[in-house]
Length: 457
Picture (cartoon, rainbow, N blue to C red):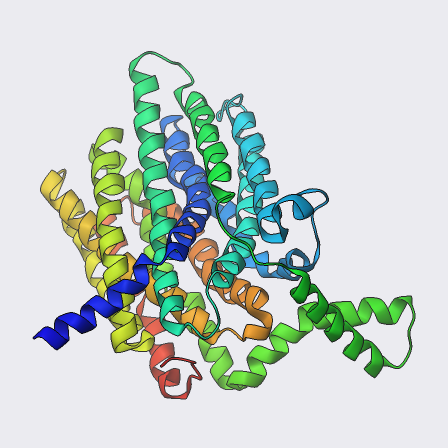
């Protein structure tokens, strides 16, 4: 008994490293923008009288997350004037993107959605581009907080990154919903516009806290990049403007892709990409329409804030940490299968809620179970991708795999509102379909599970 308790204690010690606190904040920086272009934007448009289909298709702005790997190599190499020298390469990029988000929120505060929907969505697209760009740097900075040989600390870091993301998303949602409801109750006409000013203050505070996140010197990375360029340039034979461009493009874009297929083999690589693309589609369909569903069922903004955001955040934090420990002890692949099954089962709870009508007990139960499943799924997914990455191309390969996962969640889930309309508003059937959406991804994982080349110990 003592030995078992000692083993559990040894596992938890990885969470008490000061670096985990920095990773927690980096995760929060990544999660916060999803509040702005996700639940806040959806509820804003809903309360302005726009249709479910319009709200669903507005979510296409999330599609940029699926393609951020295309410019990931540029972020790895291009230095931001002044900011890079003052605060570092990674932090310089993050601050620049946060500044774009801040400006966008201020612009949103002057817009009426019913009169300028196109402009509103365009600014939302700017937020999405800035957020997806900063995510590349955040992930790289998060990985660089831990040494390559510290495999258990890396797993703990993955869990803390997920906790941080949900902290930024859930608590950011609490601030947004309570602030919007407060402004609405005191008679502020454009209460959502006023709310975005408050959210701007949160962005500023996050940037201040970012200055306490340590960043290693990027000099060695720059030298390694130049060495790769020189090797390719020598193979091309000539030293001129054209060969310089070709060597740069080959080293920064082609290298990571070739490395991934070479490491895994073509068929297994395709299986991995298929699984990554499909795994969280059902969760995304549910998530995109959940706040609209809550509103139509009769729950107030404060109800949503308490049950879906505050309570959900606490549940997510606890079970993400437990999910991280489970992944360390049982293996990432096994955790992926369990997480997929949990996602399917918990989605069916929303069917019960839809068919029973407004029930705070069922609402709280469904939200808690959904957050437990999402916590296990997300931490397993982050760990899975991290184990697949070739350390020679960490930032670009991670961005590539994460983007493919996001593509499934955003591009396909954009039709979620149209699907509800096609079902004539039958939310129960909609949630049953979301439960079935995880099956294809688990089939992909089953066929490739024994041939995966993971650096897992």
